[in-house]
Amino acid sequence: MRKLLLLIVGLFSCFSLCAQNLTTQQYKQDFDYFWRTIDDNYCYWDKKQTDWNEVRKIYGPLVDTVTSKTGFISILEKTFYELYDHHASLNSNTAESQRLVPSGCDLWAEYINGKPTITEVHLNSGADKVGMWPGMEIVMVNDMPVETAMQDFLPKCMKGADGEAKNYALRELLAGKHSVKRKITASYQNQKKDFFPDQPINLLETNNYETAIESKILQGNIGYIVIKNALGNNKLIHVFDSVLTTLMNTKAMILDLRETPSGGNTTVARSILGRFVTREAFYQKHELTSEEKQFGVKQSWVEVVSPKKPPYKNLLIVLVDHWTGSVGEGIAIGFDALKRGTTIGTRMAGLNGAIYSFAMPNSGIGFSFPAEKLFHVNGTPRENFKPVVEVDLSKRKHNEDYILQQGLKYISDPLVQKSRQ
Image (cartoon, rainbow, N blue to C red; front, side, top):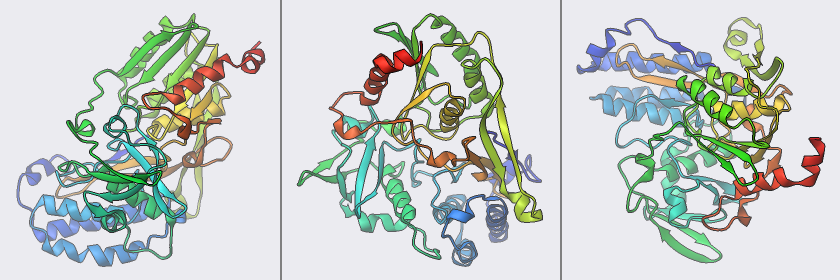
């Protein structure tokens, strides 16, 4: 997606200010800028129950007690909880900050039939290695009942009930703090068990994705490419082109987007999509709501993918899950819109829209949040998109990549092969 960085007056001077102790007035100015910028530009007020004016009344006075940048960050984080939006975050954190979802978590969970339930475990993560499983009910986190532990992340300024706020708080809780190793008590088939997903090593703090791409040829002459959280790196364009070119003679291709939680940019997205098409076509729709809010004039546009040579023309499968985030989601819906690839997996991260980034005038703290709505070209909000082939992970066995297996099964399906002839 397009990511616009808006820097306010004083960008270059803020670095010296950040090293100094700011006054209470300066922190108050920063909070006011933070609140107003979100008020003017956040594009999903229509589906939130947040009373943003009440947020200002509750959190604004807390700034009077701030004596350090760390304390200010804590207040800003709590303010962001009021949006219950995983695509809205600060660009700074402390040891006491929660990890980001989905990039800093290994469990996806939501309330099902009133119970806090794990729906997906990130493959090869700490939680996966200790045996956590979809269908488990979360009972306690660090020896605190889950309903109590969630309270810190639940919005306090709501106009009405919204179940997604509880789902958001649950996932924030399970991601954990940077400074604390997690103990998660879960119930499965009437048995409770304690899990320690950060033992002996905290994989959430050490996964640096050292390689941008991994590729190989699977049995049956099937190409396989997995992108490792590098969709924001323009160097990926050349690497991807080079790798794909070596796989041009495969009978089918699997593009694995299950390791792309941290977003990226549309230059990389369009470059990848362009290698699989032979003509220009639309791949996603944008809507900027701030102009309509200010002037009553709706602004929207559709983004085009142009072909890049040489095109890969054989069967394409795109693997997705809850760690397919932001630009990864955009690529997935793009392939669907272009009728070029079949998406297989679970629901994706469901991150809202395209984020814009801003910086506060005194502290220099950056913050990002959705300012553009994004849609499939058929009008479906990107965050609501479902893969063409949804995979039921309850059938997965331990140490099994069930989604990849379903992709291979799809490729070998005689009906799929016949449709390609």
